Length: 174
Figure 1 (cartoon, one colour):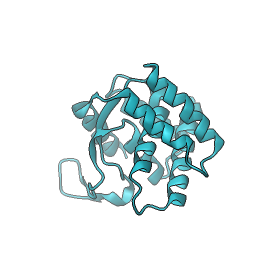
Figure 2: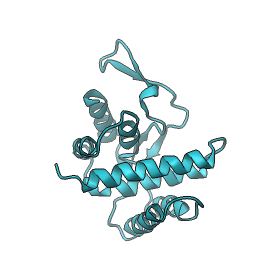
Figure 3: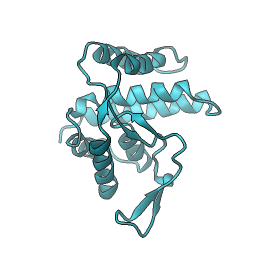
Figure 4: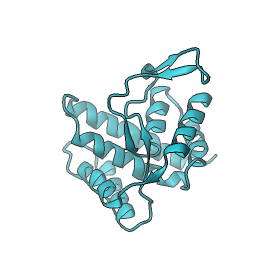
């Protein structure tokens, strides 16, 4: 995990640019209309939507893999010691923290460990970890607009998992 987090930090720092607040707010708003999502996710989505629109969360964009989990990381004889595969859903208009939280969930990181990973990651971009929820929910809203063959029930489970991971991490003291 440490080398992966370092790689994610480096990628975020190198690809960081400004996106569009209204677009991120629209991504988050999509979640408010997904039947089956918990009231907690929907309430948080409303707060995050306002945060983007009011300028309380900067609309940062970074390179985002979009499906970063342990199964897409292969050990390889490279400088980092690994190679990332399955770049089909990647975008340069990605959301900070999204891939980090996805990877943390895939390795079963505890709330405390996730918080530590988020703190290390945020040093690469000019924001605090408290903004992670807004970025992760925006990333999920973006995913929802392009579900294609991804079942809605799996999407809802993914949202709840990532929401719980971020909420739990933000409530843990370091």
